[in-house]
Image 1 (tube, rainbow, N blue to C red):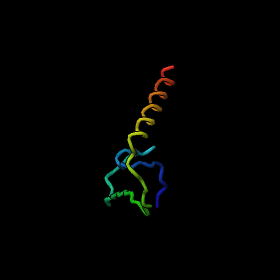
Image 2 (cartoon, rainbow, N blue to C red):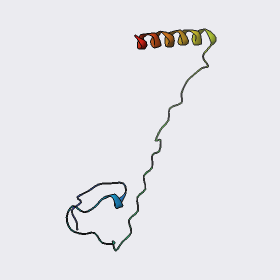
Image 3 (tube, one colour):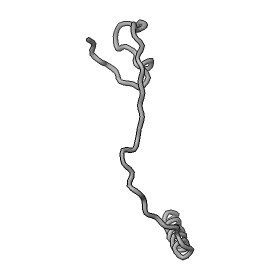
Image 4 (tube, helix red, strand yellow):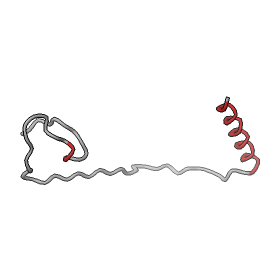
Length: 68
């Protein structure tokens, strides 16, 4: 057994705290992945011209407030 003293995604970056390091007798590998378990359908519609004008006006107002 062993007591882990460091945690790193790259084993080369984990230097021993005390003592020396030697080539390991075994080769370790690491794999990490992310996957979506469930995706709900998104309901959306194209934004019409009237709403784009409102969104743009709001964005301009936010910009003015940020500049103050």
